[in-house]
Length: 202
Image (cartoon, rainbow, N blue to C red):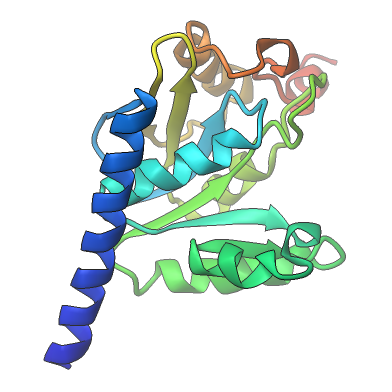
């Protein structure tokens, strides 16, 4: 058991050292305090580099993010690498099964961070995906707003909070937080808005 714990600690130490060297060489910095549990929303999501920076953020803080990634990214030789970094293959034909298995871990794991790209795509869209909102409400796990800001080269942990159930009010809070955050490719930013907000006003 001690050997296992020592191995895990060394594993995180290697990752943290790598992350800090990579961040220093590229001029990026990390900020904020990592929560113990959270449904992690990462935005703005406009580039594949967002994933790299999210991993560096996690490794710099010696935590593992279970980042949901569409199954096509696991094809071929990159699959083992993706899994080794904590990415979780999302079977889009049966996403509920994947998410239920992950949430079962949240009941026993001391630290549980489930990462979801709420924008759903790196291209500009009209709405965010509402999966993060539903999962948080169904499980009681709070939402954590992670972010990157390209002009300041900052990637970090924002606020962690419980949703109220008032979709528009909750999204107003999220919009206010991301209002001054700029993605790597700003033209691809999807502003924080859910379809459910429009339905609530009908």
